[in-house]
Image 1: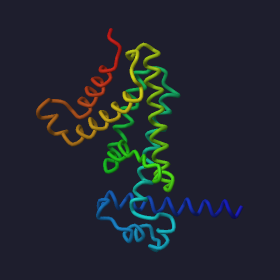
Image 2 (image 1 turned 180 degrees about the vertical axis):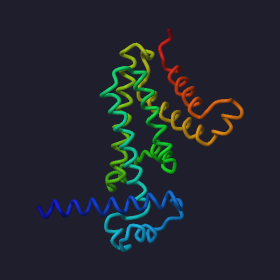
Image 3 (image 1 turned 45 degrees about the vertical axis):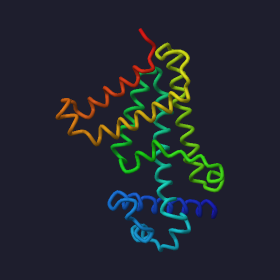
Image 4 (image 1 turned 180 degrees about the horizontal axis):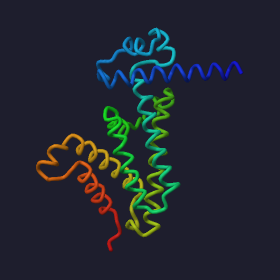
Length: 212
């Protein structure tokens, strides 16, 4: 019983620190935020913060991991509840867009942070977690694309791994650009951000679809 209570306290304290850090990162920026700032915002001593996290970088990585889990869960949920490949594809595109809109500060890290150094992965729990959740998300997308080939929606013979990796890169860049170029899209193309994204999502899908 005492061990369970201690574990709950550890989780509570860690979560308080992470939430305080995330608020500060949004307000001041990651670079401008210090461990002193985080300790003050979380209402802990600086030494207490260091009990739970080795550095500001580690805190940042734990925040990234949390949001990467959200993306993985959305992909897995779609696979479990949506039979149609195309519907699932667009659902994941929407989830990725929503993640960008909620956490623009972290989006490039969420979609691009892939630690691969074996020693670093062995020595750091959070880097290992980030690596594992990234692989789980890639596996969910690979399963989706295999389903698309089995359904005859996608071209046969696609190399699933590189296709998934390319798609993630394209989707992430597309969503970030649409967010930063929203005024340009409206003025020069007469498209809302949502209309442009839908066009882009469809174009990416068309690049791997089976010819009619």
